[in-house]
Image 1 (tube, one colour):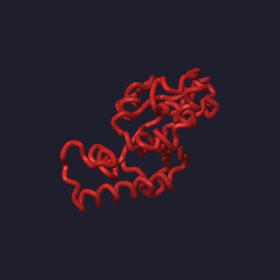
Image 2 (cartoon, rainbow, N blue to C red; image 1 turned 180 degrees about the horizontal axis):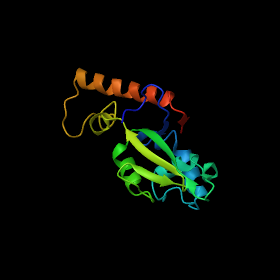
Image 3 (cartoon, rainbow, N blue to C red; image 1 turned 90 degrees about the vertical axis):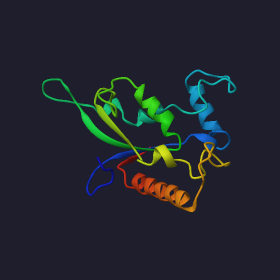
Image 4 (cartoon, helix red, strand yellow; image 1 turned 120 degrees about the vertical axis):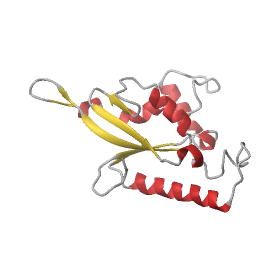
Length: 166
């Protein structure tokens, strides 16, 4: 399925991990884990906010019931932009109420189908694996950097056009 085609309604989530969580966003991570009962800042379950927390935007109160008392499912296409697609995909795989490889039933009615940038497997960091380039020895050519920049711009356009942006 293509995201962002004419008249298609979709939601989007930007999951920031990596270097931002060490300094700039560290307080948000600590605040989240404190709200979950973890007070030791040096010994948190993870150094990031779990993906499931982002899904709290899809509330149970939005669920509708038909005349027979059955919950009506709300299908939602969700584009996920992230600098850590491997871990986010693992988190999605571990979510409860899975319907298939990319879809989960959230809060009894939100049928969330997740989509990622198709270049995520090879181009999700503008600077390679970090500020030092690529650890696997991949040459950072002008073409490769251009490809990563275009993928980032595409992410921004898709996020900007979404119905809901988390």
